[in-house]
Amino acid sequence: MPAVRTPTYRAMVLRERGSPLAAEKRPVPEPLEHQVVLRVAACAVCRTDLHVVDGELDRGVLPIVLGHQVVGRVVSAGPDSTLQVGERVGVPWLASTCGSCEMCDAGRENLCTSARFTGCDVDGGFAELVLADSRFCLRLPDAYGDVEAAPLLCGGLIGFRALRMAGQASRLGLYGFGSAAHLIAQVARHGGAAVYAFTRAGDLAGQESARSVGATWAGDSTGPAPEPLDAAIIFAPVGELVPLALAAVRPGGTVVCAGIHMSDIPRFPYSLLWGERSIRSVANLTREDGAEFMALAEKARIDVLTEVLPLAQADRALELVRAGLARGTVVLVPD
Ligand SMILES: [Zn+2]
Ligand SMILES: [Zn+2]
Image 1: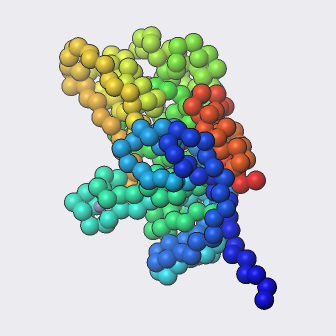
Image 2: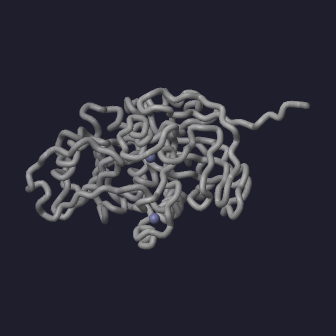
Image 3: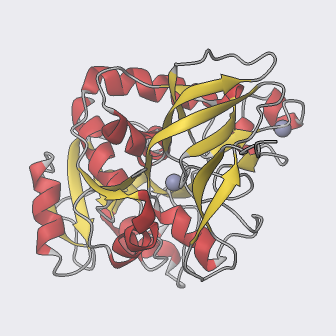
């Protein structure tokens, strides 16, 4: 009798916090109700992937396949899937919600207490295949190739939510000029805002990169802003930036903390907050954000700078992000 070969796929798996990823062969999953199996075309790497590796989030399971900016095509669909075989979609951070809690009912599914997140609670896209809930996959604008669409799924999308939280701002500060800021600077400019980019002290390459996507001004985050800002978004996970950003915004201005994790915020004098300034965080995304942002990305035609690495080099990709050495968003493609 011939041996029956179970079809398998390759995944890069985090087995223990802080350890390198392990290449594993896994059996191809069967999609259940509402689920689809996608063949991964590209998966962008996010700072959050490092927080998962480092165990800095108070959630998540092990072992886990990282990656929550996944572009793929449907290869099989379970019962009642909203997608057809062959369709290209994106799998974002929000993997599923309960659909019935107070937050879900109020249209704030990003705050659902039973929400599960891709690459943290359920396996993500550092793999050749990914299993996803079709109802939470996002349609992607055709104008973007697979690699350039991937960074839109978190850097772009969470950045977009943060931009909305910043309110009407004609002078917008962006602290930490990595993947998300690079995309959102262009969206803000498309909306008519002037962008002020704050980088690590002396990061001249980062400042140059900010100017290349239309920043009006770029300089060190430790120095003063050249003029009072209407709002600021902090993308770097650095608590020290909060008082600096508050000092840079005008009365009534907002400082938005866009990261999922941040080092402790140091004490600061009340005078920095006085004048109806506010500080707020932005958490996760809703599917509505996804649809709105993808429609905007189609119109704004964002220039997405990427550095592509093969899936097998996922550890190197994470190190590039950690060291801040990547030129643009690091994207993994199955090799
Ligand atoms: Zn809920
Ligand atoms: Zn992310």
